[in-house]
Length: 146
Image (cartoon, rainbow, N blue to C red; front, top):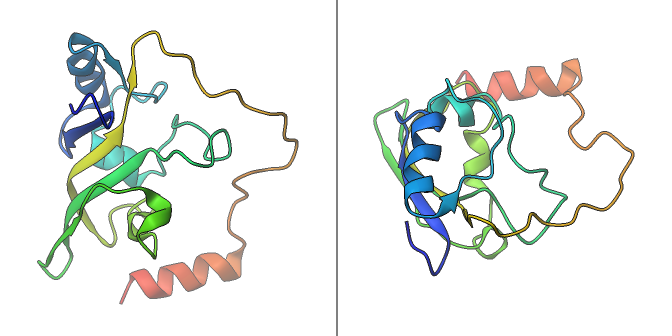
């Protein structure tokens, strides 16, 4: 845990429950609700359920860096950095794609100090994450299955 940047590096095979416990011992909180039985890699592969809504704080982000092994064996390393400062969002290749792109080996996540307040969420009534329609899903599947 880097207490200045509020980043913690977690192994992909670590359970979210164990990550929460380890962070609590350092005075930090992983801002993810539920999903204790999932590993960090599985949590990402299933779309990061329980993560803070990206619209609740548009400047913040849950994942700041990531290391993975792609399906062809290539190692991908995305150094921790502000999401909006690095060009294409390559992390999104792993979020909710069921591991089709590769296996996340470790991730740098944003944490909070225990006791710090959550971001204040403004009311918003539209679906912020609508499901992909069949044509969108087919396109994603075609790209990921190559």
